[in-house]
Amino acid sequence: MVSKVEIARYVMSCMRREDTPRASELAAQHGVTASHLSRTFRARYGVALSDYMKALQVRRAQRLLRTTQMDTTRIAYACGFGTRRTFFRAYRRMTGDSPVTYRRSSDQLPVSRYLRRRLTTGSRQLPTRVRR
Image (cartoon, rainbow, N blue to C red; front, side, top):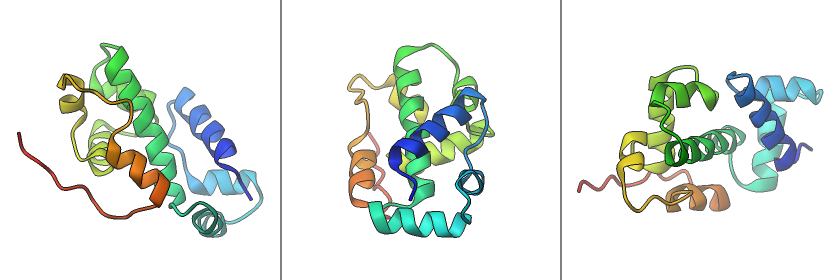
C-alpha cells in the first residue's frame, strides 16, 4: 500500500517539474493498476486519491498566493495544474472560493476549513458559496 507520504513526495516531484500528478503514473511506479491504488487508498484513508492529490496542489497554491506576487497563471503551472482554468476550477471546488478572492482576503487561513474537513473526513459535499 502506498502511504500518504509517498503520494506527497510524488505530487511534489510533479510540481517541481510543473507536471500534472496522475494516479496512473503513480500506480505504474508501484506496480499496481490505478483503480486498485485508488480503491485501496480510499479504503485506508477515507478520501479519494485524486482529491488528496488535488488538496496537496491547492495547499501549495494557497501558500504561493499568500507569500508571493506570482500571477495566478504562473501559480497554476507551479502547482502542477495544466491550465489556469483547471486551477481555478479545482481551487473553487476544494475551497469554495477563487484564488484571487483568497489572495485579497485579510483573514487568509493556511488551509480553508472546508479543505481540512475534506481531508480528514473524506466528505464529498461541496461547499455552500456565500456572497459578501
